[in-house]
Image (cartoon, rainbow, N blue to C red; front, side, top):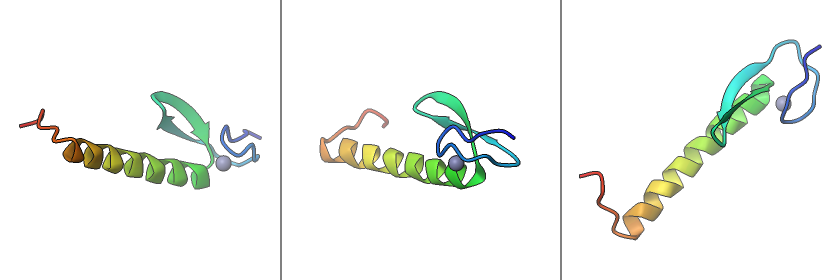
Length: 58
Ligand SMILES: [Zn+2]
């Protein structure tokens, strides 16, 4: 059985996700969580750029 690289659980199927710029294979639960976390990180990053008056993408 394949093992999730995030929670170390043995699962039937692994999903490949991108985390911290590298690909890891995780279970579906972790894939969902990691995708959510990545989205939140992206949002807070752009919020931070707004706060600092970042206008590089105009
Ligand atoms: Zn997992």
